[in-house]
Length: 178
Image 1 (cartoon, helix red, strand yellow):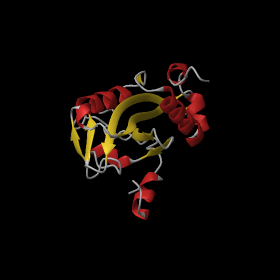
Image 2: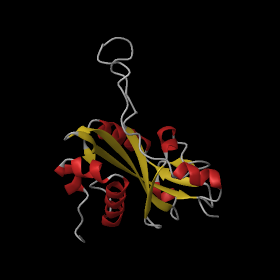
Image 3: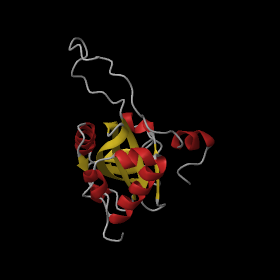
């Protein structure tokens, strides 16, 4: 069974990034100050086998197309035939005169639809989302093919945001095959 069989799933895959929104606390420091704001982060999935990337906002609540109906286990060895994915938390913020990619947090996961099981390190997902929100770049654990897919996706999604991104982020996605 193909992962994206129906039109509803395809519609979900075509969603774009959360670009920027106003700060609900507006700097007043009162109620809600210090609360984690997810308005500027978007989850980008990389399907390693298909060689494609897509945004699925359902991942913010572990309800993405990839994750639905899967029981995730903390031991990768329990899902030996899992299909490899990367979930990359991409943060957008103002840089160099406009919106830019400022943070990346890559997390590995595998999914075996046949047995409805997958591997996912929950603390890693939370920590890497937090690091991305703080403007850090955490992609060193990714393979070169996946980095290339992500770089190509980000460049093509919005070339201006890619051009405004810090050199550290761009350098982190460079591979030995370029």
